[in-house]
Each structure stands twice: as structure tokens, then as C-alpha cells.
Amino acid sequence: MPTCQSCGKKWTWGQTIRTIFRLKCTYCGKRQYESASSRKKSGLFALIPLLILPLNVWLDLSIGTALIFIVILSTIIIALIPFNLELSNEEEPYI
Ligand SMILES: [Zn+2]
Image 1 (tube, rainbow, N blue to C red):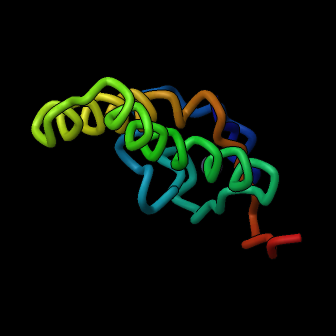
Image 2 (cartoon, rainbow, N blue to C red):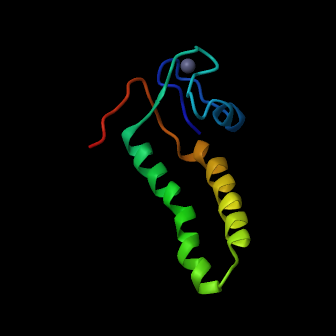
């Protein structure tokens, strides 16, 4: 789970999900940023739904079934983000 770099408090899964698009600490109210290494990992997570496309052709799924798969996978990925998320006080540039 992510730890606030400003006050050092650990965020719970629920707190992280609630602030996932703003990343504002519920304890000290400071804006947090996703660290560069964490962002790299998130990028890989975001690619997972794209794996559905070749799978779709291979299993000959209908568009509807593929969409349901993508929605389920995206939900799982968002649910997993708090476990991977690392915070930073400043926006770190991509290396
Ligand atoms: Zn904080």
C-alpha cells in the first residue's frame, strides 16, 4: 500500500481507491504524485487489457464478450493499483 511521503502515514486500500485520480492524502491533505518507478509499473498494468485483443481472435469471441473481459480486467487492475502505487512529494520526470 502507498505511504504518504509528506506525513509518513500508510494509506489503506479504500483510501487509495477513493483518491486514485487526485492522490491527495486523507491525513495531511497534501497532494502526492506517483513515483517514476511506480508509473512504469502502472504502464505495464494498463497494457494488460490490450492482451485481450489477440486472445479475442484466437478464441473467436464476440465483441460483447471481449468488452466484458476488458471491463472485468480493468476493474481487477484498478483494484490492484493500491498494492503497486508508490508516492512522491514532487512530480518525478520520466527517465
Ligand atoms: Zn499525508
